[in-house]
Length: 133
Image (cartoon, rainbow, N blue to C red):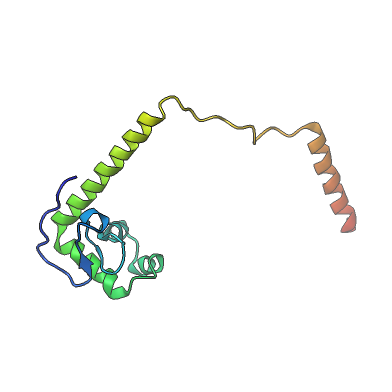
């Protein structure tokens, strides 16, 4: 696992601890990585929606995490790259363990039988006689 660059601008609501999330910057008092909040924000998600998604975080913590991301772009880029590497390694391991499996099509969407069509017509006819049409 690669080592993250040194945090140049520390923030009061962001912690970097090797024992929590593998050393990824996270919001103090939680296990929410700064990279996740910043990814939402960068993709256009309003801060109000982020606050609804993470109700355990105060607005001060969310804004401080976003400020941390903007003040320390090298740290965030390295953290996102490290996450991508980890996900890629996990996918490679999964593919090695299950080499011959294929998706099987299940017969849930079968075409209706003649009996089914008759039942539908019967129900529709009953509905029109009850309405008086």
